[in-house]
Length: 280
Image 1 (cartoon, rainbow, N blue to C red):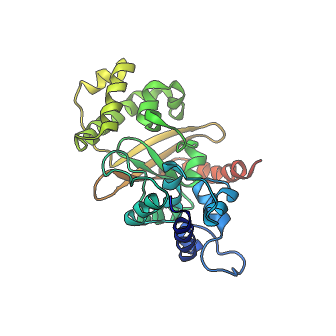
Image 2: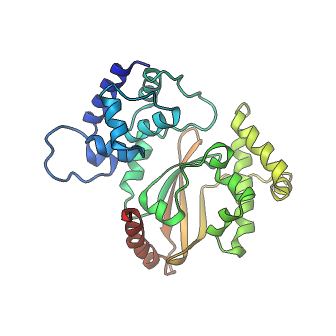
């Protein structure tokens, strides 16, 4: 680990990044260019003290998960992300599997969606990043580890995952997820995470095994959902999907379905979400 070069790289990337590029307000006049240290820490989900020590070349070696979070927070390109890993003494993430790195362009789109819930999810169901309204609508889904990082895995192994949908919608949602997963796995023939995911699901869920053996294939490009929120009730929304060129990551945007009361419920969710995010 090259602490000095890592510190210099982090500081330079932070100084080049403007608040508007990460969805932050400009605020009061800034005495130094770029983002403040505590803003980078907030975007990366780490303590300000931890990040400050990294920039002062006196912090511990960051984990790969922490480096992935920093790469997203600083809107690094793939080459810059790989350089960050090398400076921290880790190999760059492999080109296969669930790539933790979200492109800066996709993140800018996510940052611009301040009035609609949105998130970036992999084709294997791993939710990589959510905007604040996305968290308010669906809960926080980016902190899980192992196979449980995939929402598809949790859907068939954790009953609580299904509480997001009304009971009468759950069979359809399960069918959609399996058909979409089959299409994704076929595009990842050498991906160990994809193989382990399917093998574990077949072993642990007879329901998944039965659906998998049907060989239904359907890439999800849009969807209609009814989300059960514990405070504002059932929200009838349309889900629009924007895929990357490699089809391995998708930006999901949730909009109120016309002809329903979803717009009013989302407006209420904005208030509820802000209260929850600012609560102690």
